[in-house]
View 1 (tube, one colour):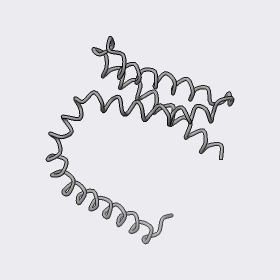
View 2: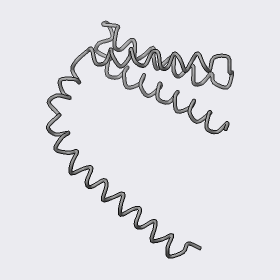
View 3: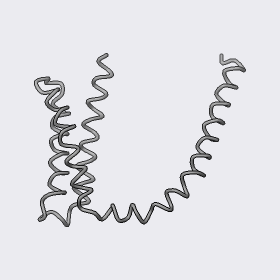
Length: 126
């Protein structure tokens, strides 16, 4: 049965967390609002998408090479390769420009899922 001191600790932790979120919201919201024009320019810049794909390639490539040969890691490898392929195609294949957003979202979700699977497999094994 929880003690009054443990209940108080939970309540205090929740209150501190909410206060911190409130402060963060109050400080960050004006900065975010002022930055929106800058971010809208970045959202339309083709080089940003290409730069993210170029950064993702070596990171995921390194993870794939390190897990290669482990049969249990095949789901990670398949999802990672598919995700990278979609991201690469959406950024660099001009014929797919009309589908760029859809391909980017699907590719990013596949790649994130792959890394989550890999992370979970490492943490459940240890």
